[in-house]
Length: 113
Image 1 (cartoon, one colour):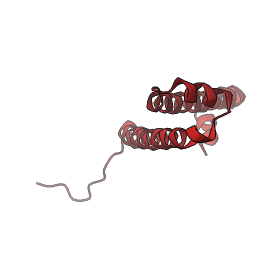
Image 2 (tube, one colour):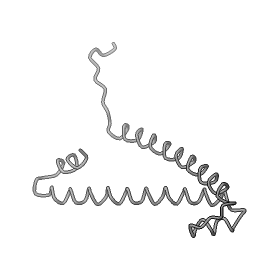
Image 3 (tube, one colour):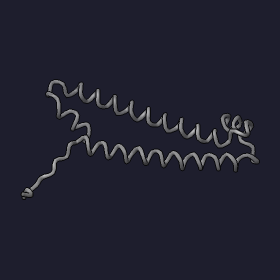
Image 4 (cartoon, helix red, strand yellow):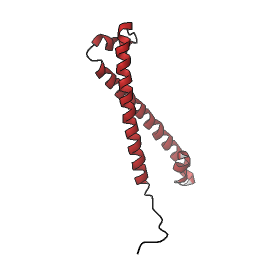
């Protein structure tokens, strides 16, 4: 649907260019969003286990000792909850900005006198 909207706003001769630019920006935006979310998740998780550098080192290598798994799981779960809330707030803000940016006009059948 968005592809159609992007292509329909330009002359027919430039439809291919518009589609290419739109798809490039979409993929770039998605990549940056995923990388940002992963970085935030990693940062919050690392902050939660920063007191134990052995756990952090093991987690990076993918080899976590059984005694440290619970602490790492708790840190990751907390980080995932925080990330979920951050993304929910960003999504809500994006929805409001999109609504305002579209300049929705209200139709008044009977103006108030």
